[in-house]
Amino acid sequence: MRIFHHADAVRHDPERYFRRGAIIPHPEQAVRYRILRDAAANAGHGLIDAPDHGLDPIRAVHDAGYVAFLREAWGRRGEMPGSGEEVMAGIFARPQMHRRPEGMLGLVGLYTADTSTPIRAGTWAAVHGSAQAAVAAADAALAHGHAYALSRPPGHHAYADSAGGFCFLNNSAIAAERMRATGGRVAILDIDVHHGNGTQGIFYARSDVLTVSVHADPADYFPFYTGYADETGAGEGAGFNRNLTLPLGSGDTPWLAAIKAGLSAILAHRPRGLVVALGLDASADDPIGALTVTRAGFAAAAASIARAGLPTAIVQEGGYLCEALPHNLVTFLDAFDAARG
Image 1 (tube, rainbow, N blue to C red):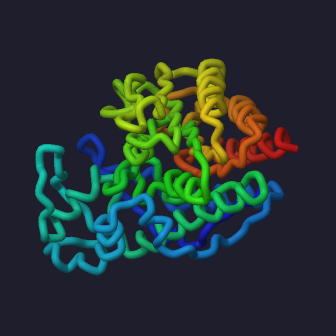
Image 2 (image 1 turned 135 degrees about the vertical axis):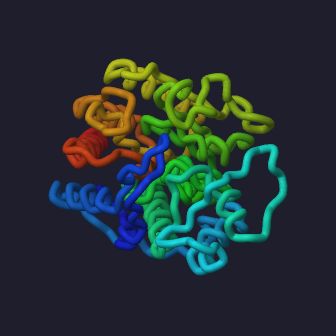
């Protein structure tokens, strides 16, 4: 498996996270990148430094003002008296709040959805590198059949103009748009335990990118406000968004059945390429997961996706610090390679 990564991934390293009234260690730490990178390398997969394709692939998905904010926020932190090692807001814009402010504190609340996405000194370098890995994997998938992007920080909760859920740039959406730009329809299969709400939002009114998300029921699980079965697209995109929800605690059998159903819809779409948003947080061992997928389940999912025979860019999403994390990644990559032949 060709694995694209970027060493700047470690430059975004949040230490704390304000959740449910308490300050806890941040689940999305830079060590995730090192653990996944080393596991893949030790398993014999080839690591490739992602080349820099610049801002064009990012701006093809994300709002220009939002991209400028991410690039400039750390340098403008002096405009927020009392700010320390992180740029973070304490007030967040709601849909009813319709004006774009000028001051930095207001902009942080406009462009971020929660306290999980603090901006630190190296955040832009990390998220830019993460996106470049996704671009490179998309190109390699079209040229060679399949590739994996070790994108960290993850991306599928990022909207075109908003960060949230540990995500800043939507790497899976960037990979899909990169594939689509060269002609033909594309599909995204998101198997993270959380709904890919940002990805859905980016493509919701489009028919050229089919989005399918298999995830834990959001009625009482993040992201709460999206990810329901009746969200099927709008306008030209009507019918091109599928949410396959699973009861909390679901294991291999229902998870694999949902993936099979998603692949059936994808093959009917007849895409020229597929992006797999690979969340390893569906694991029974994940510290913030809500499903009980086993290592055998990840192997079966990889084989099923590989047998679809589509040019496939696998983009890393969630999967958090636990002993099973590196084993689940290697299991998925090995099983995909074996099934693809």
